[in-house]
Image 1 (cartoon, rainbow, N blue to C red):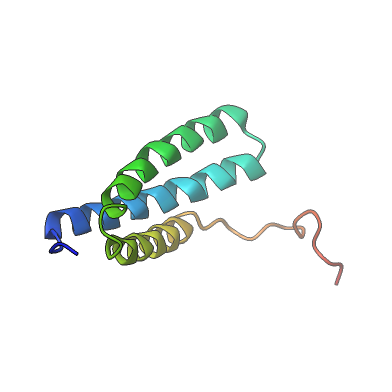
Image 2 (cartoon, helix red, strand yellow; image 1 turned 180 degrees about the vertical axis):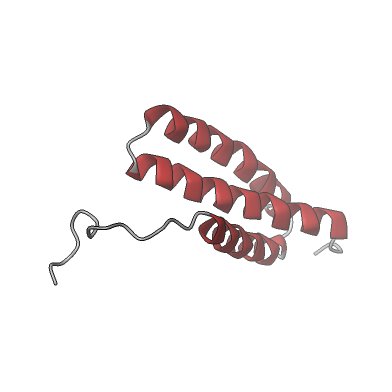
Length: 96
C-alpha cells in the first residue's frame, strides 16, 4: 500500500461531497417529475463520481475519504434544500 496523498484525499472528499449533493438534487428533480433538471443532475452525478472512483480504486484507503465526503454532501444538501412544511401530507403518507 502506498502512502496517502493528502491532495488526492481532499479531492476524493470534495468529489464525493459534491456527488452526494448532486444526487440529492437529482432525486429532488425526479420526485418533482422534472425531466430536464433530472437528466442534467444525473450527468453531473456521473462526472463527479468518476474522479472519486478512479482515485480510490488504486488505494482502498481512499474509500474512507469517499465515505466522509458522501456524508458531508448529503448532510449539506439536505440542510440547504429545506422547504417549508406542506399544508397537506405528501402523497402516499399514512392518514392521521
